[in-house]
Amino acid sequence: VAQSAHAVLIVDQAAWHTSQKLEVPGNITILPLPPRAPELNPVENLWQFMRNTWLSNRIFKTYDDIVDIACHAWNQLVDQP
Image (cartoon, rainbow, N blue to C red):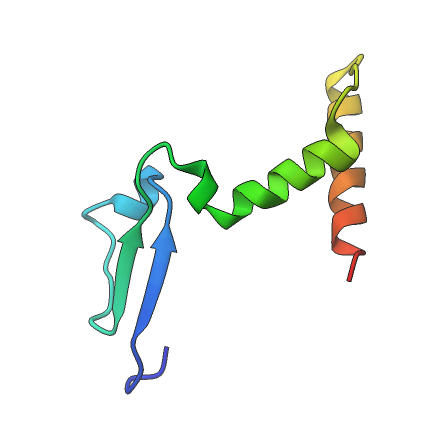
């Protein structure tokens, strides 16, 4: 963020986002989302889309199957416009 600008960074309640040890510059304001409010966290929409499109109604035989299918879903997602 430029010195003459101000940014608001929206974060979830992950411990590393709310740590008192985090040094935040004066021109950045951290705005935490309320706890247990996934509908306010945009990445939750992404996970819901991936579950509905590629990851739901599957049976995984091995851990490697889970990783392979999750990687395939992610690659399909990033290939979309």
